[in-house]
Length: 114
Length: 114
Image (cartoon, rainbow over all chains, first blue to last red; front, top):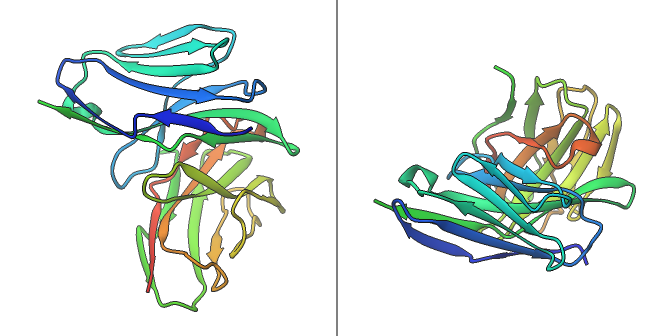
């Protein structure tokens, strides 16, 4: 199973609050889990990424939590700001069919209200 | 400035016409990708190329064609055989195919076919 399931589809958070986006996967062959941030009308940009041998990675206000046994990972945005309003995609990569493949979740549209 | 350029930003075509979307990168990356993005869906891989003069079909290649004659360029042609071509098209690159999790995206081309 090569899907990555992402939730929620949309999220509204007040400025200063914590935004949490969750992703789940089935295939234990996935070996790299990036998060991408996309602003309207723009291409996605790599935000933060984690490998399955690490349970947490923090970069500024952004933290990935990774639960290998549950096959879940999540993005936490601390002190959310209106400038964080964007669509966030989780993704997972694995070697399949002769090439390294990146599977994207369906995306979460985050709105941070002032 | 290093990056990926896509042109045009908006493209309008009549049904039955082929159209070519441009993608150029000056990152010296070996691997390049084309994705299609539809509302509420994640990115779906159309074609990828790991080296000049080599490209492979992704998950939704039907109705599309590509070429990779130069390392910097990876144009995508949307043919009249593509049943539902209206979408946001994203080009991306990574240093190598092994680095697929760390992709750099262009700003996208929004194609509307009527």
